[in-house]
Length: 340
Ligand code: SAH
Image (cartoon, rainbow, N blue to C red; front, top):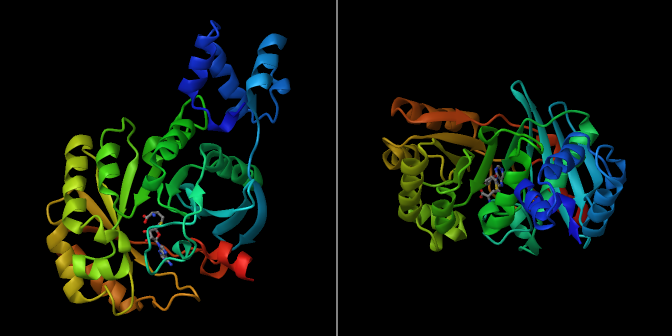
């Protein structure tokens, strides 16, 4: 028995083909599951009783459950319970261009970024495909609206759960499924080099974001443990390869931590590192959390940093801040829930 939300369209086609049945039935099933949002195969109206019986014998419906919600004007945050009682979160943000969701990919995270709340809980396990897919279904049901953009920037390192993340993208991107355009999907990684290479061969035009946060190894080592495994020069080499293969622009995320990585020297070093690359930098005002001592850079330092990048012809944006009132930094809702 398989959870239907774990199954890609191609796998479902194969299921019917292997039974010497019509593969078109996969279109019908996906349509009922993802467009009409049935909760049981018995609701399907255009297939035979026998097909429904077979489906019921091979697949079942199971989602996560929402256990807590927090709301602000332009943001809504969800805490989900998993079947083993673990918790993960998702955040919905209302933009003028649409509604985006930030989803989790793992329970906890082993990457060890010193500024990040999620990593305070070490990885317990990877999320299964359905646990990512149903974050979206439940949220869409709750807000009564379609999600237009997905970012994989919640709890976890997507490239440490690569195969499930790729299946998840296949399902949500499928025109027969949720039909969320690949250009509207962004995967964010702290820099798992072999997976960046693998991702450059993925045939969908999904956006890649790299959490860089420092322009040199010494500084990066001091805030991100993963840099001891994959150094900046290795990341840059794999990103260049990715751009050459895909012709896609890469985003570099750069959290500004007061007095740590927000200096003029860092900005100039970052310009040198990224010069001539098809990329842009997303400057992220740090979302302070009570457990970690880093502070957010002040407005003036953020703007100075921004100006230096601009003057050096590096594409740059400052991330709009959402939901500081609702514990929006990844992992905050979960740890507030657990620690009271
Ligand atoms: N592991 C992946 C995706 C999850 S983190 C990655 O590292 O990219 C998503 C983004 O949020 C990363 O850029 C991460 O560094 C950033 N982040 C973590 N804690 C934050 C905080 N308190 N405030 C702002 N951004 C944060």
